Length: 114
Length: 113
Image (cartoon, rainbow over all chains, first blue to last red; front, side, top):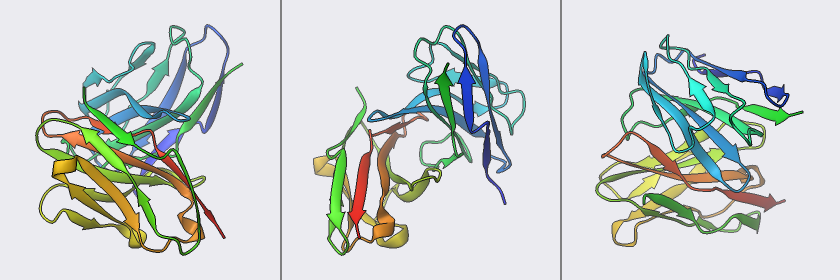
């Protein structure tokens, strides 16, 4: 079955460490997205990529970095510069980076600070 | 600024009650509208969408939503809810001006058996 795989499901980080969250899709979608979900905040866009080797900042990109070297992969790095990284992170993809395309979501990664 | 507002953060209903979840948006130009649902322990999935045409759209599991352009609203409805409808519901809006989707803060729906 086609879908989006996020790993790991749970991740713990020590203060001052960078961590990388994995997102892989086998839907042959062009566009991929990273969101952060906090209770009562909804989904906030961190970064998105409409095509390989290109990506744009979302609304809350500070303290995060991404790469898009392959169509099926869009890893997110949470750097030590992110002051409040504890959250639920969702990866999504859509057929094309066009506003009327629905997004498909992964199961998420929950990041906690030790 | 572009925004999406969901009026109810937490709704509790008994089975067979009727449901209406409010969603209003502030967006210029032509919009695309979505409702997503997140069932407990599952990933976020599309419930229904409106791009153009008939402003009353029907989605999965008996849900429907009506786009009222003059009110900038896209409320979600279901005539008779079931316990399995317990979930968090997100309204989302995108504009043809850009390729981003703005999500509302979500409404937690709890159905009492």
